[in-house]
Image 1 (tube, rainbow, N blue to C red):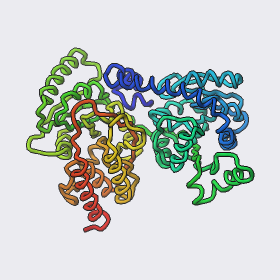
Image 2: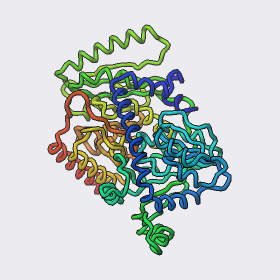
Image 3: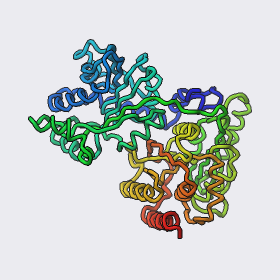
Image 4: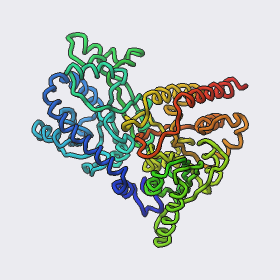
Length: 514
């Protein structure tokens, strides 16, 4: 069963259909413009990189040594993000293929390496070269990808039986050094890259059904210093402790198909909202049908901007469309009034109580986490990647003013605190998008008296409850977008203090048992 069938109703709507549908919304137009700017920037960097090629010669030779050591003679090799083709051309192999998003890069690569099969392609969206390949290499590329999980999922079908994916990426402790090198003109000025630890990368590979079989570090000194660099890179970069400062981190992974249940579970998406009138139609248009059936439940918290009236109008229009196309997979829409309840936590609990389907999802009505990402959460849950799928906004660069600096610092602090407190890696405790089975939520709710009604937001309530029941919590990175309608409901200082008190409360209950 393929991913399209996993995420869409009866296979009638594929993931590709959903991707195309994105370009019929305002969000899609913004996305297309952003991607066009990204490609144009890489074309500009092709000229800069060519002028500075000599500065990275020693580093490139180290990459050739490292990656080449993973590839057997006679292998069929594909490199994603091949740039000028220097690495793929130097690797052993009977067939060498390279793709890059920049047409200018590929033009220069073809001039340098006519023996390599080269083409322009965006690994996340375009048709890729025909496989199979024994080795697929992504060297210093994952930091530039919009959606690393999607890219990995798209290259997996190109692997030959027993094939391997090789990923290299730079250690983020080198970020100040690399930024300084850019300012001094010693390195090409790449756009902001994804913030990835080795554990983040291993987690994303797992979400894409790739099991890490080997991981390590290399290149302690990226410039040629006689007698020093070679010894440091061949020996020092492997020494425990010292290896934590190596520039290059690498992974070798194999494909392990996910076990998907024959009967796909149904889905209830809970969308708490207050004064979000301008986001309602986008939420309905962009939320995909997942599994056998999907309902979208709006829980309104006494809006004063016409949100309820907008939801009711959309529901009438939507019901007319469903009646006209009874056989087409359609969202089921529902509206609940929060009444005297206050806070997102109360809204989520009321939405969960009204849900009739197997999987429960939270979608924030500001749409800063795109509804288009929900199928990834769904698949991670039904494929058993975790029992509680937690969205993470702190891996990919954020759009515009999606999160203010102090909010970002606060989120990082609470992620570290909760990772220690819950004894599971939680990179982002406050992302609104969380997904679990209804049966699992019912167990959390049945044991809620242990903590009491302490969390008006609902995030800690769910995370603490899942941890107490020893559920496996799996992080799923998403790209956080800027809000385009309405105002944030978060007060940085007042809510930050409240979150700090809740963290202390969780420590007392979970770790001290009092």
